[in-house]
Amino acid sequence: MLGVSRFIKVTDINAAQLRSGAYRQRSAIWALVFKEFKIRLGKSRIGFFWTMVEPIIGMIMFGLIRLSIGQSEVHHVPVMLFIGTGFIVFNAFRSGMNFIPNAIIANQGLLNYPQVKPIDTILARFILSIWLHLLASSFMLLLLWWVTGDHPSFVDPLLCIQTLVLATLLGLGVAFLIAIYGTQHESVFKLIGIIGMPMMILSGVMISMNELSASARQYLAWNPIIHLVEGFRHGAFGTRLFPEYDLGYPTLVTVLLLGLGYALYYNYRFKLLMK
Amino acid sequence: MIQLENVSKYYATPGGRHYVLKDVSFTVPDHAQLGVLGPNGAGKSTLMRLFSGVDVPNKGRIIRTGSISWPMGLASSMQNALTGKENARFACQIQGISHKQVGEVVEGIRDFAEIGKYFDMPVRTYSSGMRARLNFAIAMAFDFNCYIIDELTAVGDQNFKNKSRATFEKKRQNASFIKVSHSLEELRAECNMGLVLNKGSATIYDSFAEAEEVYLQNIK
Image 1 (cartoon, rainbow over the protein chains, first blue to last red):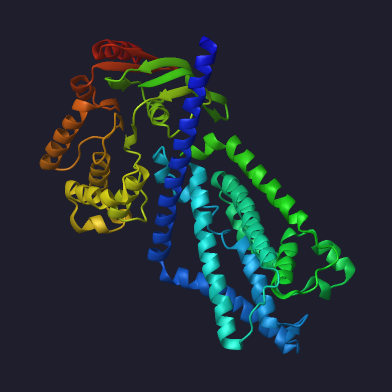
Image 2: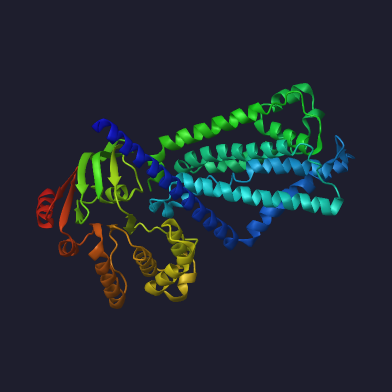
């Protein structure tokens, strides 16, 4: 009898703690999101402006290169739009990469509140970078539509959403790992800037996999982002997918990275709190 | 009430684990006004962080009932890029103050801190005195069942000091507190219980005088 009543009591407590725990985390994350937003806007309007304009400048630069060698379309897609959509998917992966990994260090003072856990600071920055990315992407598409009259037809909108969500989560997975290591060894942060540019070229932002030879494709197909970029374009324009295309691959990588990130977070949770 | 069950806390150092607490169990009762004593580096601040739930033990568990504050004091809970007002607002949101009341509480903090127009400027521009004033004003804006105080002392001119003391006096009539202070005199005047930290052990005493005696023996 005693055992049974005790058991019930314990689970009751656990359920209540779980509820209040989830509530605590939600309000902590929202408070952090608003705070980050305020800092981001307050510190530099230029920073916000740059977030909106950077992908457009990239699109125009690479677009002009292709236009200058006489290519105005890639698989019947206007070249600017083709490259622009490449940036939309790639930046979903990349946009938080300079911002999320510093989250724990930048919020060190606020970790003194028991309600704020290191992981909350990462999630808050992740949420903010999604917002900014969606804003920048919509801005880019509307501007293109307005200037050139071209726009995606979104033949498979679900696939577009799926690839975008996967790209943001894949980005979170990588940023999470960098955050955990970088908080302990700050030199790790320097890698981000070095790897960014080659990654963009290798992710099919301005080329299509079907323009390449089979042997080149085999190497590039190891990059999970290229599957997402091409998948998004397939959903947006109905362009043909490349033979090695497999959405399961980036999904698997994302799940593994997030799992590894959380395991490492759990393992280093004491160190991350240390000042 | 805060109850520690077989709690161990250590830090990894190149020379092996450094234990701050080693298999420690005790209970801080509801009406405790507890002064924590221990030599420098004994882990007083770590213990305060464990009490409030900022940090977690490596082994064992800590059971808390009632609302417990963050560790208030030198380690300020502020972000330098934010203004005083935004820091105050953040503290409100974190403590679960409803939207309607946030403005009111923030204005209360502005009045208490008496730092004038600096309240609307980034904390990084503050002098250490202003920072301490804001810190104290935010700490006193909420009602907790138990205050965790790590060297949070009244600062500023005589007027502000008196006001701070009076406010805290009022708070402690309905709340318990756990306090670390470099001033034995202050603890002696305020505490009815004592906790002595010594080389990984922690012992609680029902009278502060007794705790003080043990502590003074330890550091001899």
